[in-house]
Length: 157
Image 1 (cartoon, rainbow, N blue to C red):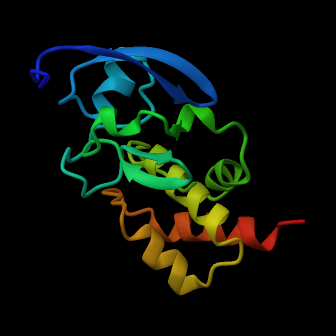
Image 2: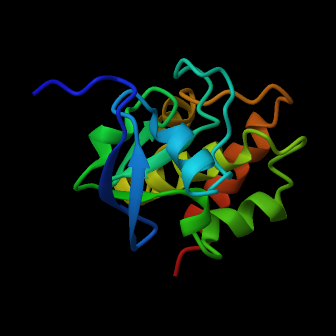
């Protein structure tokens, strides 16, 4: 039987280490479910077409733009939002290097930087620049963000 796009389904989704029962329509994006159903508002609606990265989340250890990912695609996945990162080295480095101005893009950049450092513990400067090119900061904090990533790499134990 084909689901109508306005018919809600109820499914368990693992978010930030906790399984939550969520009701949503098959056409709902992960971003709208996070913000409107679960009150996880750290992921920001920027461009709403996958270009800016303000809505970045980690799904099964890979960064995704939650504004273009359907929530139904996240069933049986492990989702981490900015609310699920607690006191990570990259967050501390962002504060130390003042790697934000207005702060709107910051959660997406932190998620992307965290994923970068998980996949590439010792990335080159070119890898850092390439990795971060999928996010946009309209306040131009790119240099500070790159410095924050380099700081984490240099200060690892």
